[in-house]
Image (cartoon, rainbow, N blue to C red; front, side):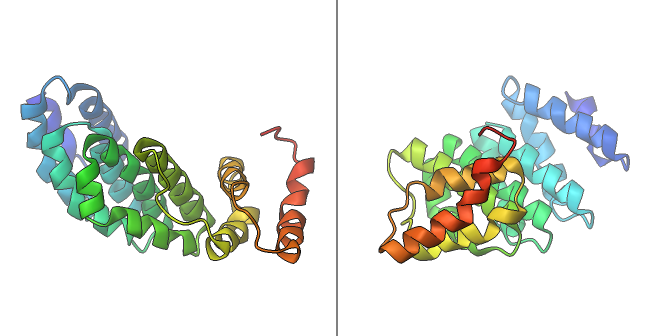
Length: 203
């Protein structure tokens, strides 16, 4: 385990991915040794390469070890506000993973509020990942994490055209739970989602 952790600082991205994969799989069985990797993760979260920043925060989120969770907070906070959308969308999916380990930590650190703010992000992938993250947290909580009002529904629909198919399904599933305030709003929503009825993807 120690020898693998020492390989974290390799300049080769593919090797680093393998090291991170190893840590995800074996950290649970050796949580005390997994702490050794924290400094490497934190350093990689500040790397100039957005792929490495995203990889680091995603790996920290996937390691379900209580001792590591507290070290994830600051890198995750920075990643959620990162200038690169790939890092932001990756960080959004990490929030529910952290919630599974420590719900109190997520709520105390304001990560749910940050996810709600990301519903208005300029990047559609960030929006769809934030919606998915909030939905997952709502399921774990047993209650809604935010109010699905007209403003939030319109933000989601604005991102619909430029999302991946998975993102479109996520948005449509969420918007289907919204109750329009009047008939004109309902008609507007139907017009925006109607093209998806002819989509090749059955979902």
